[in-house]
Length: 210
Image 1 (cartoon, helix red, strand yellow):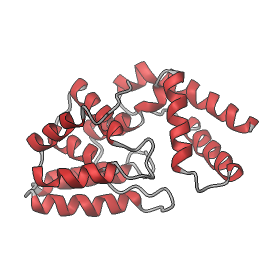
Image 2 (tube, helix red, strand yellow; image 1 turned 90 degrees about the vertical axis):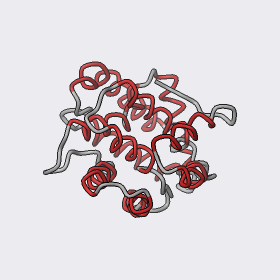
Image 3 (spheres, one colour; image 1 turned 120 degrees about the vertical axis):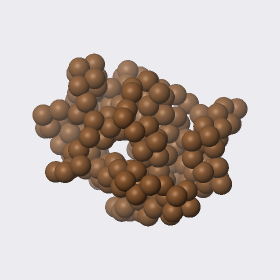
């Protein structure tokens, strides 16, 4: 699924955020996800994940939705602590919005799991599995859309020389391919795993030809 956010429909996101979250934080969300260094990790990425949340039932919709809004709120491709810094921002939001501690902990677990995109040793829930699958749903897009995604990621890492980027990107994709499964939920594994692996193999082949 690929959903684009434009100036004409960004209002839909604002309305949703204001309905389910603290409205005063919308400007922070919008400005962060509209930063100039972003090409893929934008408001469109949020809208894609929210569309998946609306499609697949979860046990704690608030926790999953908050994880979606905040998981990439800090995104600087030159740094390696984006997820932890995103958690710091979420924790400030949780205080402002009086989020229950158990919900806040669940959100933090979800965001932190995106560092490795592996299931933690404890605290694994069906919601966590789906959230991680939502975040990597892009891997299973039709090739034409996946190719646009891969080009957008390259633009986010424009500060890296081609040789460094291609080697690093290919290494990341190969490590994903080496996993027993890319998707943790049975729903995603059954319907998206095969195409996602095909896309990864194809991108690796292209990278190694450069």
